[in-house]
Length: 142
Image (cartoon, rainbow, N blue to C red; front, side):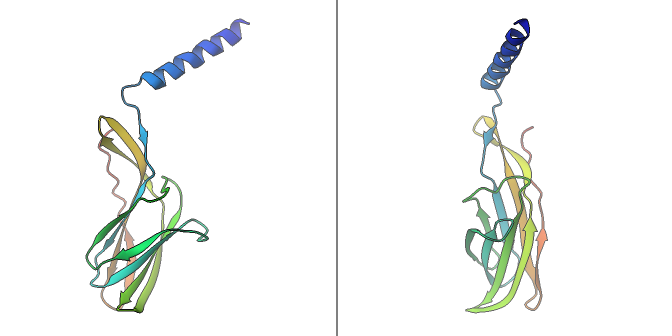
């Protein structure tokens, strides 16, 4: 009986520490940033690991940056970011990169927000296009 009382007391202390913690983490859905460093517009599609579901999609203008955060880009999960580089209605190049968001921390209001973060850059010279990874996740709070 003494053991069960100690276990119950330890569980209550743990719950109180979590609830009363001044730095409660706010979970976020995560983001993927895409940067288009080419002179061509691109149609972006983001897929799940098995490429069975389109999670997000849309236009990324030449020289533009777009943040995709509509869904569940969790740190450590696998996604595919596809770019169809366009010239008018013609696809010049179709390129895909595997993305694994890293854990990032950012000060949000007065608490630390923890979320998945990934950044990829589309580069190209008119003939050859490819993605480059730049996962420099912000870590404003620890």
